[in-house]
Amino acid sequence: MKDAAYHPIHLDQRADYAALWRLTPCRSLDYSLANLWGWQEHYGLEWCFAHDLCWIRQTRPALQYWAPVGDWAATDWAALLPGLTDAPIIRVPDMLAARWKECLPEQVDIIEDRGQWEYLYDRDALATLPGNRYHKKKNHVNSFIKAYGEPDYRPLNDEMVEDVLGLQDDWCQWHECESSPSLRAENEAINRVLSHWDNFEGLQGGSLYVDGRMVAFSVGEKLDDTTLGVHFEKGLNGYRGVYQTINCLFSRHAGEGFRYLNRAQDLDEEGLRQAKMTYLPADFVRKSRIRIR
Figure 1: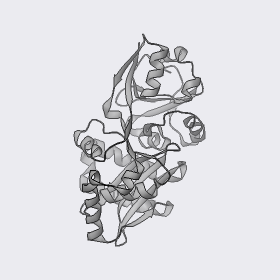
Figure 2: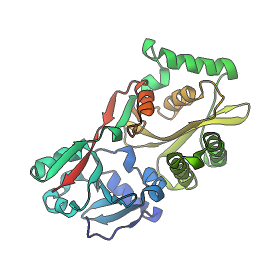
Figure 3: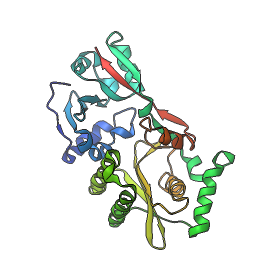
Figure 4: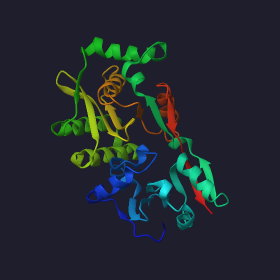
C-alpha cells in the first residue's frame, strides 16, 4: 500500500504481527519476526498494519514491497493490489502469486525467482543421515567424533547467548567480515536477533562444545506445526566435520516432532546452491517476483 503509513519494525508490535502470522497459509522463513528484525537495518524494512494485513516494504537499496502477511483467503485483492503499482513485489510465495494472477490476470506479471526459493529438508533424513545418499555427510560426522569424542551438544539458553556472540565474533574475524558487505550484514543480523533473544516466540538453538569451548551453533524457529526454520548456523574453522555435525544434531534434537527443516534460500550463489543440494531437499518454498500493472 503505497499511501499507507509505514514505519520501522518495532518489537512492541510483535503481538499484532504474531496474530497475522498465524493466519498466513504459507509461512516463509523470510517473514518470521526474527528475520524481519534481524535484517531491518540492512534492507531498511518498514511495515504498516491495514486492511487486516501487515504490509512490508524494503527501502534499501531501492523501494520494493514484500508479500503482505495475514489471511490471504479473506482479502479483497482486486481492491488492494492496484495500490502496489509503484514498485515490484518480491519474495512472494507461489501460493499467493497464483491467487493474485487468478484475481487480476491482466495486471499481474509473475517472474520466477529461483534464488529466493527456500530449501525444505526431510527432518528424519538430516537427523540420521541414512544410506548411501548421505554417506559423505555421515563420514564427516564420524570424523568429528573420532577427532573430538562423542559430541557435546547443548540446547541454547539465555546464559549461552554470550558464548554464541563470542563464537560469531571469532568466525567474523577469521572470515574478515568487515571487508565483505554481505558477511557484515549477516553479522549485524545475528547480533540483533541474539541481543533480543527473549522477544521472539518459538526461537530455539543448539550448540556444540569441544573441551568446554563452543565450536558451533544453530539458531532456528518454529514456522508452523510441521516446519522448523533455520536462521543462522556457524562453526569454527579448524574443527573437522563441525558443520555436518551441528546440522545433524540440531535436526535430531531441535527438529524433533517436525517433518521439515527450512534452511533458507541460496540467493543465486552457485557455491551455496551446490552445498544445499548435497543435502537432497525434499521440496521448496517457491517464490516469485511480481509486478502489478
